[in-house]
Structure formats: C-alpha cells, structure tokens
Image (cartoon, rainbow, N blue to C red):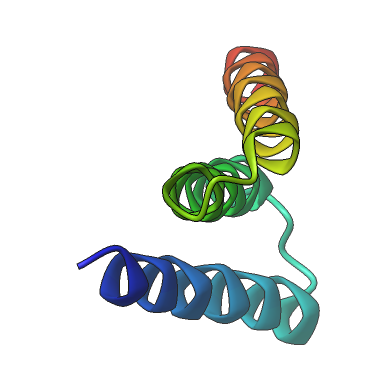
Length: 77
C-alpha cells in the first residue's frame, strides 16, 4: 500500500513539475512541494518499518518543513 502511494505521489510531483517547466507557469509550485512532502512522509514511514529510525525521523521532519513551506507559499499567492 505504501509503495503504491509513493508511486502515485511521485507521478503527481513529476507531472506538476513538467507542467511548470513546459508552460513557465509556476503558480502550482505549492502543490508540487506539498506532494513532494507526502512522498517523503511515505518514505519515512517505510524507513520506520525497516527499523531505520534516524532516516525515518529525518524524512518526517522534512515532510513537516515542506508542508510549512507549501502553506506559506499558498498564503503569499
């Protein structure tokens, strides 16, 4: 289940990034950052399941930071 979520979120990130690069419209960057954070959250949970707690905590902190940046970007629009 986590592998499927990671793949879906990764495809969304790549699609939004490609859209921004092709159209030079960067108004959806907050969504890209948000979904990239979700990828990191899923990756962190998988690291916890494999008993690699340091990497898991690092990825969860990065998830929280990216969600904060995404919300701040949305507020500034």
